[in-house]
Image (cartoon, rainbow, N blue to C red; front, side, top):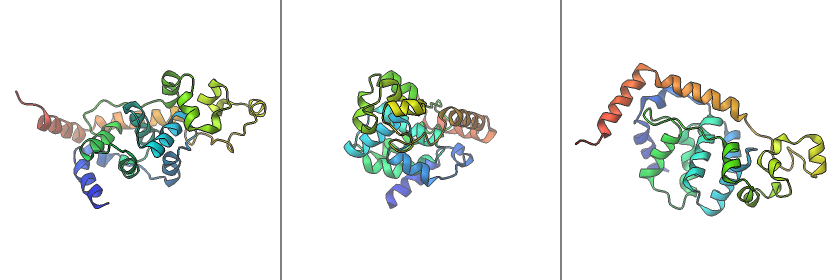
Length: 209
């Protein structure tokens, strides 16, 4: 939409870090993320819940954006269209800066990369949320519902479950992709131009006494 492009242009000028963070677009990754078919139950449950209800709490919003921008290494701008169409409480002035911040590309905010498995175990220990929105995992025992990709061939036979057919394999390795994203973004923060731009942004938006 024209208004979205205009807003993206405005918010994209906030930090030089963005121009230095080149990411290859993967339509395959983006479609899997949109449809809740990434192979990570909590991410998939969140996306399916959002698509159905138009709502996610703050942690879930941060998690799905983190997964998109850090683990899938996709441009945060590419997440905006789908999310802005799904969120019932969409507000441009909040939505776009939050996306950029969660992507770790403002140059001034702390980098946070959410681990979907850790969050799944901590915030949905009985997998009630996951099993509600990812029904193909309902018959699995709790540990496997959190991490179905850990099932052996024998586990799958005992549970009448076919990984890759009943539920997708993970599309990325979260440990490897987290490491890559962390190293890339932190190294960019050391860049002289990024440091200068970060100071300029802080000076401009700092509350004067």
